[in-house]
Structure formats: C-alpha cells, structure tokens
Length: 202
Ligand code: HEM
Image 1 (cartoon, rainbow, N blue to C red):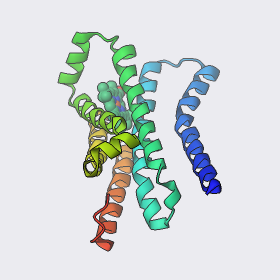
Image 2 (spheres, rainbow, N blue to C red; image 1 turned 180 degrees about the vertical axis):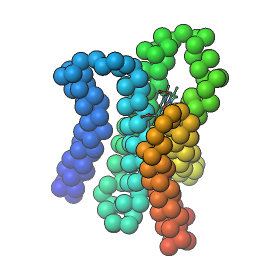
Image 3 (spheres, protein in one colour; image 1 turned 90 degrees about the vertical axis):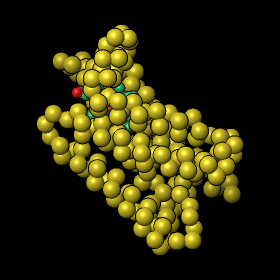
Image 4 (cartoon, helix red, strand yellow; image 1 turned 30 degrees about the vertical axis):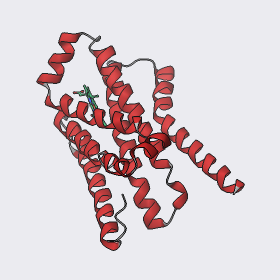
C-alpha cells in the first residue's frame, strides 16, 4: 500500500516536471540567447502549441490506461489537463496583456474581427470550467453530471484545433498532425465502447 502511494507520488511529480519542461526550456532559451526579433509572438505560439499538446496528452491517458492495462496512470489525466489549462492561461495573458496592453478597444476588435480568436476563447472557457471542477469536492458535488461535463474536453480540443487551423498562414502539416492524433484518440474511445457496450463509462 505504502509502495503504491510512493509510486503514485513519483508518477505525479514526474508528470509535473514534464509539464514544466516547455516553460523552463523557453526561459532557458531567453537566458542564453536573449530576446529575439518578436518575443511576444514567440511566447504566444509556444504557449498555444503546448496548451494543445498537453490537452492531447491528457486525452491519451485513458486509452493508454485501458488498452495497456496501466491503471496507475489515471491521475495523470488531471495533471496534464491542468497543464493544458495553465499554458492556455499564459497564452491568453500574453495576448491580452503583453500584446494588446489590456486596451479594451483593441481586445474587442481582435475578438470580433478574428474568428480564430473567438474559437480560442470558447476553448479556453471550457478548459477553465474543467479546471475549476477538477477537484475531488467538485466531483462529489456534481456526481454523475461530472462525467458528462468533462466530456466537453473533446469540444475544447476540437475548438483549439479549429483555432489553430484558422490562423495558420503557411504550413498546415503540424495542425494536420494534431488533428490526426485527436481523431485516433476519439477512435480509441469509440473502439472501447464497442468492445465494452455495457460499461457506459467515460
Ligand atoms: C483564450 C483565448 C485565446 C486567444 C485570445 C488566443 C490567441 C492566439 C493568438 C493571437 C495566436 C497567434 C496568431 C498569430 O500569430 O497570427 C494564437 C495561436 C495559437 N493558439 Fe491561441 N488563443 C486562445 C486560446 C487558445 C487555446 C485554449 C489553445 C489550445 C488549447 C490555443 C492554441 C493555439 C495554437 C496551437 C496556436 C498556434 C501556434 C503556432 O502557430 O505555432 N489557443 N492564439
């Protein structure tokens, strides 16, 4: 029992270290190379990309747990989901505070004139709701509704992908790779349902 608890803790600490990696790498790059030509753009893109990646990693935890029988990794879904939310929050703050200087007119103009920003906002709203209800207490309070609510994570991933595709100016390949991964994860979910018609679990 004690051994299990220590493994769980180690696993979670490892996941937190992985989640901090991209932020530390970005900070390290600036410490060594200094600010480049357009650091705000670089920060926006790096945080956006990692928000999406951690969202997909979080969605991959359940299929890996089910198909590989790794029951112990279940808590990592929450850790990586919260990492996705943290990078998305940093992404939003860099855009709103550093890029647009919290200028209300500029913010309204960007949201209303760029549909991809609206899609990003919708994805963020879902991630924020899921992060706020990710505690054990919220799980207890919401009961069966918690599972339905947290299925919205797929909508958040779809909206984030749409946001990604919509603002690309040149190379679509990275966005297609993310889309293919999301499709595979969704297919794995359907396959599990098909194999286990009576379970009805998320
Ligand atoms: C909170 C609302 C959001 C706003 C206002 C926002 C805004 C932006 C902006 C301004 C860009 C750069 C576009 C450009 O340079 O032309 C961007 C790129 C991006 N955003 Fe967001 N975003 C939001 C939410 C999200 C969320 C929730 C995710 C993922 C979960 C995300 C993922 C991305 C990705 C992957 C890119 C492209 C990065 C690249 O090209 O390398 N964004 N976003």
